[in-house]
Length: 376
Image (cartoon, rainbow, N blue to C red; front, side):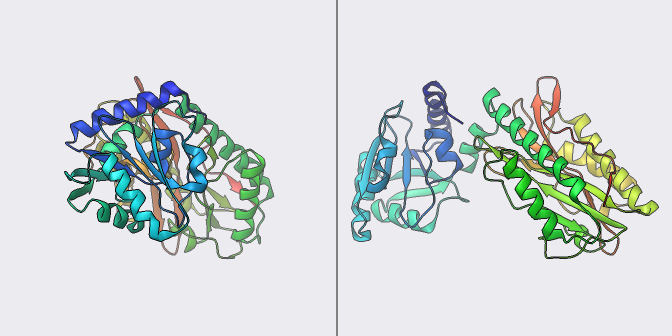
């Protein structure tokens, strides 16, 4: 997605306000979705450490290798770039210059980082350059900016969902009894690329049978599809830097009455979550609405994960839709609704949609049929 100067400047202004509100002196980000979100610059995590320091006042300070210096030029906002050569022995000097420019080397202060993203490589250079700085978690500071998606972000997510749904629709007629789960995953991956997907959020999960489909994060290993299998397909696409993450469960050949009941129960739980999610509702309340349906049907012990997770530039981000999360939904928040039942020896069912909170309630990006469908 091409980010306009106005969007980037507005995001950095919001970040400055968030840094002040959190009582921080700065925020240090290394390559990842948040850095791209705020600067429009893309980096790969590599053996060369990259860090950008954001302050409440003043231009961001970016430390980067000389070979990537072109990325810091001709930007629609002010940026101070400090580059270093290939020799690792000279890298600490660049980081000392950056912390000095940011006013943190001598005075210290409190600097926030993303716990899940900042590597030991960058942290050691930062800490060595400014030993008096107090490095603290700032996951919430960044998440507060990225959780509510604007219209352009929502449009990119809708496209990612459309690509994913079209790819699976093209895959389903090719699925046959006796085909290996790895073959199905390969066909689906090819269809994703042919339908315009960028880098998908993960390799497709294709899990069939009484044991494998009951494993929520199964990796295909070559098992052949058999009649009577429940077949869980969890897949997604990428578009414009944003992602989709969907799941549908199918029957291979003829299913038993209990398998059909499990599928109908999960479908009802999915619908219950859709019905209750709205601005002002707690994430935990949405989880409970789906969980109540599954527990009432007698399968509560087999729903072993949270209802869903935030979705956007990352496959998993804030907000997390778990029962103990009091966070209140706001317009523009995007997340998954993915209740499931997993019974070893019988099989598993999951039905996952990608949704966005609107002023009037909830809109689903995904509209692929959720009812049981027989393949093979």
